[in-house]
Each structure stands twice: as C-alpha cells, then as structure tokens.
Image 1 (cartoon, rainbow, N blue to C red):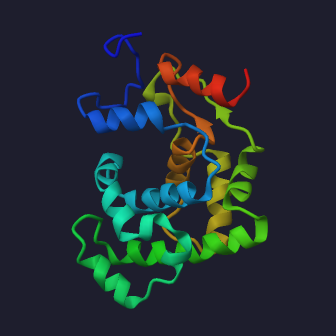
Image 2 (cartoon, rainbow, N blue to C red):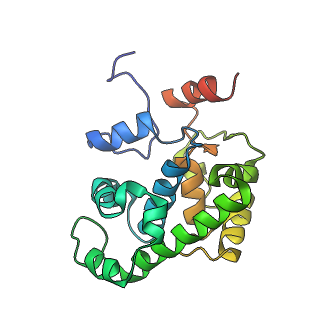
Length: 198
C-alpha cells in the first residue's frame, strides 16, 4: 500500500511528517518497558493544557533534560535542577509541572518496588490486554473511561501529580492499553495482529 493510499486516523495532521511517524510507529502500540512508560507518562503530564504536537516537538528536549528518562536519576533531582530546567527553552518551563515530574519519578519507583515493574502495575487496569475500540469517527473517541478514571484515582492516591482521568486516558492510548485507531486506519489491524494474537 503506497503512502498516499494509506488511510490514517482523522485527527492526525498529515502535513507534519514527525506527527505521521509518531502515529504510524508508536501511538497505540503496547508498551511494557518501564523506561518508555516513564517517558510517556512524563510527556503526557507535561502536555496538560497544551497540544500533544507541542510536546512531541519538545520530546528530544525532555530526553536531554531528564537524563534520557532515567527514573532513578530524575527522582534525585534537587531544587538546583528545577531552576536549571526552568531556564531550558527545549521543554515546557512550568514550575508546577517540573516539580510534578520529579515527584512522579519518586512515586514511579515506589510502584516498581511494590509490583516488580510499573508495567505490571499499569496493565492490571485493562486486565493485562489491550482494549480494542470500535471507532468510526474521531468524535466517538472518549476523553475518559472507567478504566482511566480508576487508574488516575489510584495514581492520585499514590501521590502522582498532573495525571487526571483525561491525561491518563491519553497515556493509555499512547502506550497501547487501548487501541483507539479508527476502524479505517491501517494501523488498527496491524497492531491487533502483532499484539493481540488474532
């Protein structure tokens, strides 16, 4: 199938090559690696109130600023690190979000200790298998679900910040806990075949 003929999710701005790559290669693919999950959850919390594309463009900046998303290193960041990050034009310079990232790294490690991995903790909210949506139109995509509400509630109880039900649902979409590719998108079936054994 040629690039021109491929049908993709209607929300995607196909004029942005980096956005197309993210959609085609990452969005909705199940993630079980803790470092990647920390990256995704950090970027989603940074996105609150902004467009996802804004964060996507700053992804490398976050990678550089946050020790390649090494959760153990980020958890040890000090007030000096916060001030350094507040001067970094390659990330969103929001003090509350920067402090939340450091806080969330500490809570992330606590979950790893309790569950063996953050992945094991996270995937329990969807019974350890991706939920496949039945979406014909972008408008049908929910902003929150009962699963994202339960996940967000538990994260809040554990001390996480900037991860309400809507942000958590976006995280679930990104890391493949739900397959929200539209029914006519070429990636929907590719991901199902690769990860759902159907």
